[in-house]
Image 1 (cartoon, rainbow, N blue to C red):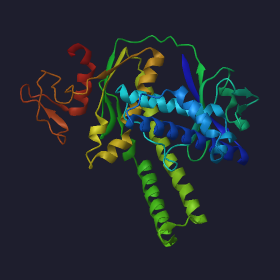
Image 2 (tube, one colour):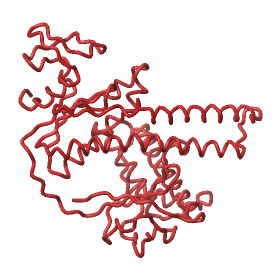
Image 3 (tube, one colour):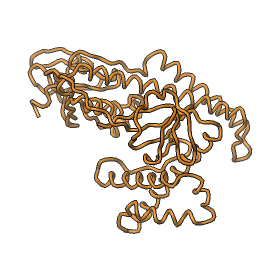
Image 4 (tube, rainbow, N blue to C red):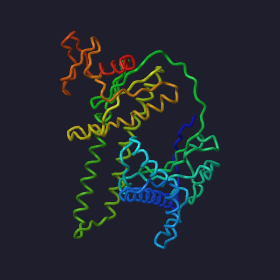
Length: 374
């Protein structure tokens, strides 16, 4: 089994500039390939595979105005074009939404490095056109063969993520089945009475969110004061503020990600034979302007993906419940379906058997029984 290992890079100033340039070329190649696919589709043309697009991109690089593309590795632009084609294919297979163009301002800088040319020696990685870059925690890298290496920047540090062959652990599972109900009040409520709080409601996260709002307002005021006609002038103080904003964004995102990892790990450590999780229509839920911010902060899809791969690693069966399965509306005692259940009714009261139970806990119980009733 392949397991991802992520370590922090320690590049010099020159190497960091080259890493940023490589990420920019990867973003350009991805957007160019996506634009060609979209243009070809608008003209009723057939799907362009990545081999055809790579040939076109090679011809594009020979033009004088695109000579800067030669400053980086050829492999990262090839992989970026392949990633764009794969994203386009997934859309037509109804596996994902239509791919979006990558923005310089909003997209995380990252790129691919050829796994054959990636070398590791004496606590350093050899990255194409960048050179030997030191890493922290070199003891975590114990092999010479890597899969799908990716270099990324989180606003403060550069990281390299590599896939390493790991033996599949033999874990003796129990006969238990865990149903997981996710929501806004709590991240997850499990049928075995485990409950994981909403990290966005904690004092620490609220404090960081308040700091972020204050910094953003401060930067906005400085932009308005330094406005030159229709153009905004970026001063040194604004650059410092934007760096603080990036670091604060990073801290909040890492806090949420760590909470999701801890919740998924706690569920997997109980060693159930099966995990059943509801499959929410997050895109539809985001249309509710009153709850969209809270729903987006919870990261339901990320939680599902992390829990899925952890279950796969330990050989636990992972089941996605049907999107229209009425887990919250069904009484876990008698099976009565209360179709008019409102969102503000946090305690489920069955009119048939008079059973009273927390609606989220009841949903998790019904999810644990999902395979028996499906």
